[in-house]
Length: 138
Image 1 (tube, helix red, strand yellow):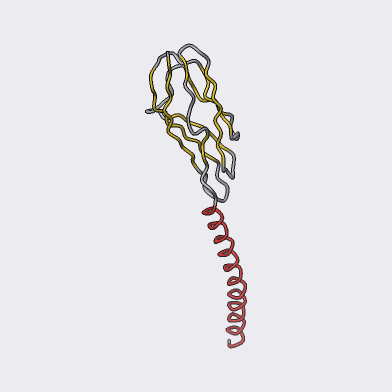
Image 2 (image 1 turned 30 degrees about the vertical axis):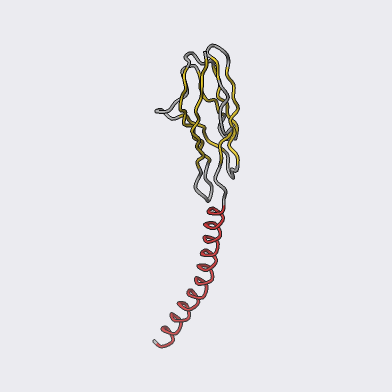
């Protein structure tokens, strides 16, 4: 009986000795991931402002998302603060570039909200956003 208890105690100590370093290693790895995720720069959408558009004339403005650590899954226009009629955003999945393109049909000054999202890996994906004031002249 004593021998059986001694064997059980040895097994428990062995399991504890093996588990403790692994738990420390996992905690260290988790801490490194959290620190590296927190240290990532925030992505930025460019350009800082949009050039003036003209009614009836083609408009093409490149967009770029910089300071990213993973690919961009989409560049989106707000439903409430959208592009003027005739313009749209084009973007190919995983590309850091996009394009505002089309031909505006109505003059005015428009507040446009764009956002871009990046994929996540061991860190959560990130978002870049920018508010533009787009003037469409006659």
